[in-house]
Amino acid sequence: MEQTYDGRGLLVGETLVVADCHVGRGTGGELEFPVGSGTDMVERFRGLVERHDPGEVVLAGDLLHSFRTVPRTVADTVAGLQAACREAGARLVVTPGNHDTMLDSVWDGPTEREYRVGDTVVLHGHEAPESEADRYVVGHDHPTIEIEGQRRPCYLVGEGQYRSSEVVMLPSFNKLNAGVRVNSMSAGDFQSPLVTDADRLAPVVWDEAARETREFPPLGEFRRML
Image 1: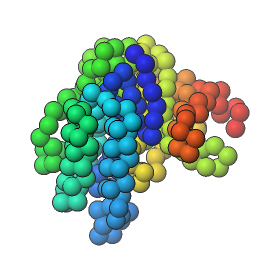
Image 2 (image 1 turned 45 degrees about the horizontal axis):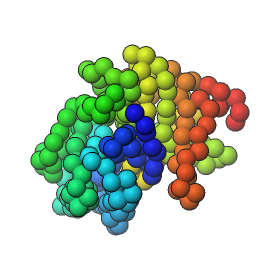
Image 3 (image 1 turned 180 degrees about the vertical axis):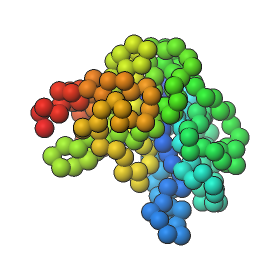
């Protein structure tokens, strides 16, 4: 099934997937998140939905950030994501992540541990999947790649990563997440059990200014080029 990268999201057929929104992620102190960050997330999300007109959208885990509290501002942001889908006629599904302990307080829609889209299974990626699939789409690790001293959010794409199947790891949709620098990481450094051979993971960077992707060699080869 064809996949398209765009703005930290992934279109698989007619299904749009984003991961690790971490709504409520803050910068410390009294603020749950900086003023305007929730609006930015909803606007970027709405832009993706409007560009691709998906039949369904899957939030692949860690929709929420806090394990303990869900302020009104967080509920408002989640409502904004729901409204963007509703206005576009897209069904919204959540595959809960390890941070989503209070998901029920802001979400009463469809929830699936693993969500199948043809030959692809979408899940958060903090636990091993139960379903067999040709491709697994996950989040959880928030990958970034450092190139010429600058860190950029990236997708990681690897064939034969889990049960001989392809794994596609998405960057965090929340711009406040610094992410992990994957340049020198081994499989054991990743939190997701679906990564079994980091050297075979190829970074893909979305260039927002050019509106295109930049694909790089697998990490095992890429390290020798840096």
